[in-house]
Image (cartoon, helix red, strand yellow):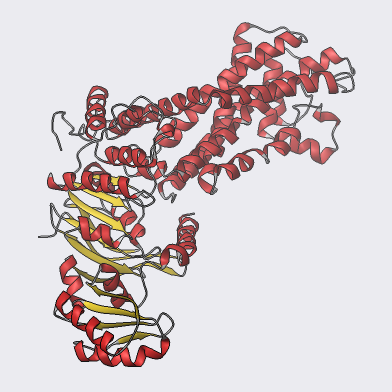
Length: 335
Length: 285
């Protein structure tokens, strides 16, 4: 039986760009799927297709048991969407925003009012409830946006980069809110470029790059694919690199990676902290001065690197404009 | 999630028109609330046409030939129908900017993900803009009376006819806000929407009978002016207000301006509402 969110072979092109190149997803009811990928990978396009905002060129999508392409309006009754922007009216108060959304979900006026009050309380916005949201902090606005997506307690939720642009404290707060939500049985699809976020919130992770799901599994499964822990050494002098590599080879369980320009050597190991101490001793005996040494456990960053051949983090600056371009293309195509 | 409130949405309304009206009103109310929170926008909307009234009356008055006279008082009575009509069409820019702003802020995405009537976001916007246009028009009419505009100055008129004139003006304004809605959905930023919503209105409102006697234009320009949808409403208002300068012409819209004005406005609404709603459905923010 397909899950609460199910997609098969979703394709969406904007001009020459295949924003989605055959995406398959299956999110069991009550679980969280983290859609992880750099800017421009197709995460937002996938969410837009699943939330009826964009019609895919081909493929199949079923949300909450309803065919997205055939019955979009039925789907809209069963989903909540919290987008990349905090999509609230900045001149309306928090309360007015939530009431409006309630009414547009076809709730009766009084019910919409009661629900708004309830959500404002739940999201710690009661004090600011009657102020225009223009005066809210970024974190408050995100919370209100999330509250707006929850007005009808939809069984299926979509969050497109819910914490992008938030400071660490606000991010933590929002994570707590999301965890509570999921504990209540909501099925959630969450996109993020923060590997830590996916690790933290998602049961399953689908790594997306260039419009395709290139890997999926639990956080642990994905980490296992990158291998275990590694020792990383930065030597002080370039001349010492060859000797250091010999030392590391003696302890390693695989080949040593050498980065000339950063004087960094990395080798996969087993044995943890005890082994690290031995490595340090051995390097000392050989008279190799080191700037830095550490035991690294694989992060999702490593997973991403090993899967895609490029670092996920680099996108923030480098691919930022490329994503804008992709987004622009989407606009163009929509015309 | 607490379940203290019954959050089950009302089941699919049997009456689609009912839902459409309800949703449009929810959006219209939202836009009107915004208006009260940004009063300066309404204020500037009023100041601009008032400035036009004063400038045209005192700068152009006395040198413009209407019929056989260049009397400044005649020009004043002639001018007002033109200024009123221009004012209502300038609401286009406000609609365009409002919609573009909603797109940019992601609100259109939110609305499109809700189970609401498809045209309601745009209808709610244009209805709220109509309210603003009516307020502006009211203030403007008062200012016009203060500077000396009088109905029935050339031909007799009645209260009913005067009201009919204002109704035609509001209908024209409403029609033009649908053009604005389409512009707003087609550009990337509210800034572009503001200028895109207004620049083309200058030729439309100036190549017309609004500010000069179009029968004195060179023939080809005169034909454009006489068939300009905008001119029909101006001509209709002059007739209904009993003001001077009604164009004598064989062109059908000039001979039957009230009908022409109605037909043009309804046609504009029909065409641009269809285009705008279609565009909205595939809008990408």
